[in-house]
Amino acid sequence: MRDPRSLYELNPDVEVPSGLPLVAGLTGFADAGSAVAQTTEYLLSLLDTTVVATFDADELLDYRARRPIILFQGDHLADYRPPRLSLDLARDELGQQFLLLTGFEPDFQWERFGSAVLGLIEELGVASTTWINAIPMPVPHTRPIGMTVSGNRADLIDAMSIWRPTTQVPSNALHLVEYRLQGQGHPTTGFVLLVPHYLSDAEYPSAAIAALEAISASTGRIFPTDVLREQGREFNARIDEQVAENGELAKLVGTLEERHDSYMEGTTLRSPLTDEDGELPSADEIAAELEKFLAYRRTRDDDAPRGG
Image (cartoon, rainbow, N blue to C red; front, side):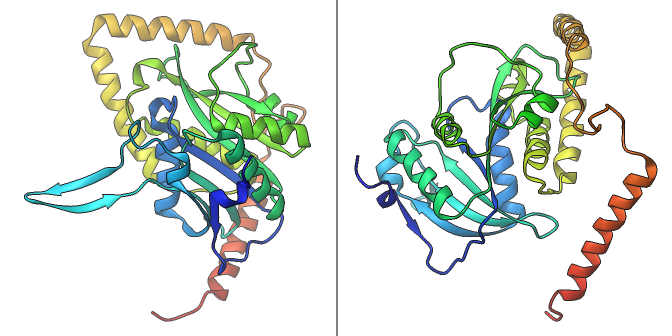
């Protein structure tokens, strides 16, 4: 195998603190509801990010299978959007840093790519790795999006994984990364969102919201979701209208609801909002956490440079 480090170029002007979590989402195979694409685009457009490493698309991508977009404007070519696969240093809504690996899933050289990612994780002192994926499932849009959780963090699996099959599945590049990290004992978590199959080809905002909530549970990073939640309410309202006007569709959704509710009655899934005894936090505990949050924000605001 050729040196995995030659697959990417590091930005020499960026210093990455040790001990940060890594979040990964690669587009390509089986992105139901465009969950991964929406989530990564949302984070890149909303957060303060700086490129840490850029991967070589010519080495990893089959351009004929996933052709880049170029703009034809009247009589000339005006814009070319090259494919992007990069590792960024990002800050969440509280200013907490984390690493974000986004872009296309490699078509070629998975072993070399996986070794490159594992090398970066070791070199940068990454504390934990979290990645997201989404698959279509016969579940209703009228219930919260469930997920299958893999990896070696039992707390997250016990709290959030509602479907735990034993089966062979087509893998993707991040499956390989997770598998290698497990062998090293590195804390790693994969969240596979279970998206209603009849919405798998749509841009389903609720899927992106569920992905962000899963990432928050895994990393402790906080992300603004107001825009996505408003989009989700509008999207679900349109779906409900279509269901109400179509008897066959209404029957399908009703059947899925019955099966979902029957399945969930038998699960021992513990809500991530409860403690080990299954108790919800008290009002005083919630108020204390809110005060910590507000105090942190006030400190940041006081330290921020003035002007401009």
